[in-house]
Image 1 (cartoon, rainbow, N blue to C red):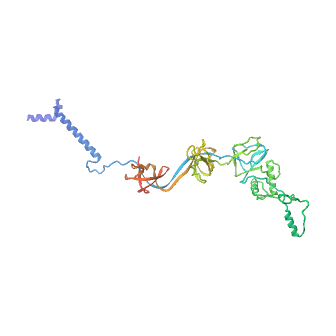
Image 2: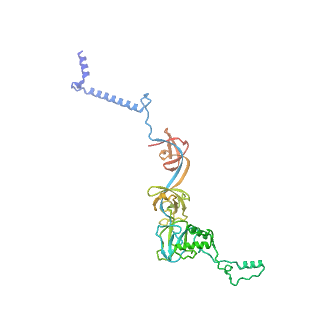
Image 3: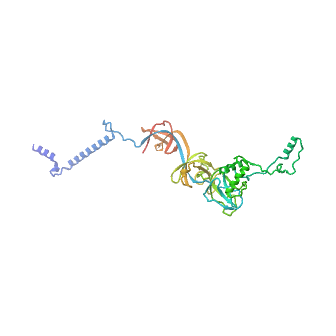
Amino acid sequence: MAETDTVTHVDDTGPEDEGIEPPRGARGRRTALIACAVAVVAAVAVVGALGLGGGTDENVSAPPRAGSVVPVTRATLTERTDVDGQLGFGTEIPLPVKATGTVTWLPQQGATEERGDTLLRVDDRPVVLLYGSMPMYRDLGLVAATPATESESGAASSDTGTDAAPSPSATTEPSTGTSTGSSAPAPLTGMDVLQFETNLAALGYTGFTVDEKFTDKTVQAVKRWQKSLGLAETGTVGVGDVIYSAGKVRIGQPGARLGAAVGENTLTYTGTARKVVVNASASDAAWAVRGTVVGITLPDGKSVRGEVASVGRQASAPEGGSTDGESGAGAATVPVTITIADQGALGRLESGPVTVEYVGREVKDVLSVPVAALVALAEGGHGLETEDGRFVAVKTGLFADGDVEVSGTGVTEGMKVRIPE
């Protein structure tokens, strides 16, 4: 019994409690058992975490894949391209000054002139702006009378049965065969007369019928107009007295100084409406078609609507003289003029660099997804990952505004695809 009690006591307290070092072999066996127990617990924990332990807990599952899910949609994709442009009043054009003499007065550059205004003075005579498309090509006034020709007089004599001889005071012009015995003036006729009379009436000088005939009543109105201009009241309008334009003009850079003789480039002008000119690549100007609507971003970031008004027919060689026709730096360009209907939207800005945005290509009624949904396939090409983790190969089309056109077997409208993060 005493042995048993002693053994029991030793087992309860342990050698360490008694300050007695246990045998070396016994200590090693106890350390090995503890290590094995820890390893078993760790293994069980790992198996349980992996779901391989054979447990029946149905809530254990793999974490969900990251990324959002979006549907395949049917839409119209539009490719937009930006090019640089210059806001201004367009190319300056020489005014068709037909007056001869010395330039005695010129308007200020940038001034706006309208119908009835003086464009310049030559030999101190005003050259006036009028509106019209037909240029001034002759003097306007009454012409010498053209009485009956000799053949007409002879016919009249035979009708009466008498041999009437021409009046001794009448002479016949060889070039026309007409008698000049009468001094009564005759009206001048033509479309240029109608254009001038329209302007004269618009300026408030009336009292005649606006038509193609320059009559005595037109002469009286012209004299009143000449008096207001400080001119001699002759009733005749000289070919150099007026210049026609389609509307108001903005005076450009003068090509002559005061005291110089009038020349072809004495004075230049532009229209008064601001517009944009783009030097488009000659090989990439298919977008520039008259009537095409474009967006214009101004220097302050504001956007306005523009419309292609004209496209140059002659390409300009780039610096260096190369005309390889390739797009980019060094390519030949053609001028594209863009008008802006809402001039008020430009504020007080008269010139400066702008950005023009135009539609390059457009596809309608196609399937599309965000570009971020495309994934690279191991076998090459692109694909989409479906919501359930499958991969579907697709063919890509137009890329525009962050979306891409897609097509392929199994790709349908409304199908959910994943955008990986």
